[in-house]
Length: 510
Image 1: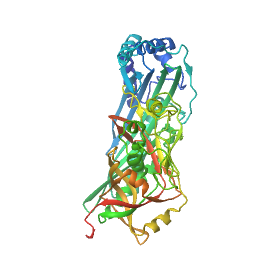
Image 2: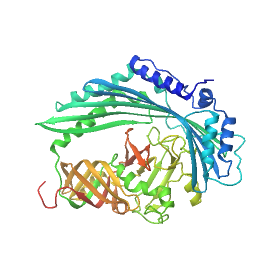
Image 3: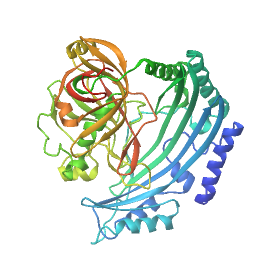
Image 4: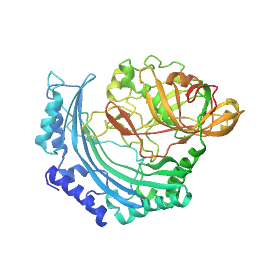
């Protein structure tokens, strides 16, 4: 059994990781199995967990849990044809939570010693003021999914294998177009060891990977510069980054940059909008998904708080949040409260059927948790968050939606969204799109915003195509209440009968 202080452990793992990036050797500090890691490396036994949970319930409370985390994150970056950054970060600690009704006491420590854990548990216990509770005497490992197997630990991938990947993306970008003058490439990998032990006897462990390969390019034409970026990844191992993926990352970024040289602003005003498949699902995530997180509804913040069982969209609209899709960055074997991940239907045939629940909101509503309790790391308490949010495909052909729009805009990609959760008002920057004129795609557009209201947008969806596509990026995070977690989203092509476009003034020449 490994015995060392947290400081020496962090110095050893981070130092070895950094040295490995430079020399080609890694400290393979963990074994491949998902179970038994924290006991073998830090001496965290069920007996110690039981004493920490007893302390967390020493003044009462409904339940308590311990959330252990050891994560190792690495970045390798190339700029101007040279690898100029290679660094590592280590996250190690335990968060201890006591729940009383909808109130939470929370303590955490970076020291995985019994003394430090008992002190953090005493802090969490202060939320309650009643007779002591007793945790379960036996902790039973829970069965979970296996949605992101990791054939090789990232700690076993030397620099000699990583360098050719980032170099190949760089070389491919310049080979694809003479307009490319700069490329910044980044390869990020992380592996997280997690252990959750609850006072109700649940015990779950996980090995949670995450990675992405990204490039940002600058193109120049006639003295004018445009830039674009793209990334692919998810909860995937290193073997995912094949020559085909390298080519796709580079090709997409180069295409997006070149597209902008011919793009113009369309007229401003109310217009039909066709949202293309895939990455535009971020609009669904931001403008509608947050409003379906149960804490916003429990607190009467969301406009959906009185809408369960009511029609919120046309009958051909069904929206899901699914944590069980293999290798998607928002997928989880279990959430950060130890609940098994699942597929949750939010809107079924146009009717709002469920919110996204953690344990607290589920108890408030008298329903089962949906596996959406998530946190950024051990130092944060969990809250309801999305995972992979998307709309199911409909019966129409994508080209029929463009014809039906007649005159409007086609949105292929959106970025930099702003949303007011309560009202559902949103604004998104359109980074790539085209005009729709006489039912056909015509000139490329850029530098516009689409502005609207999430619930109204949902009601204004008048057709859905059958081409659902999930975004395959791994670099994106969702922010909420100061915490960020990785998520994914998807969308088939949809037709919205009217959205406000903020570009140049209506009637002016673009």
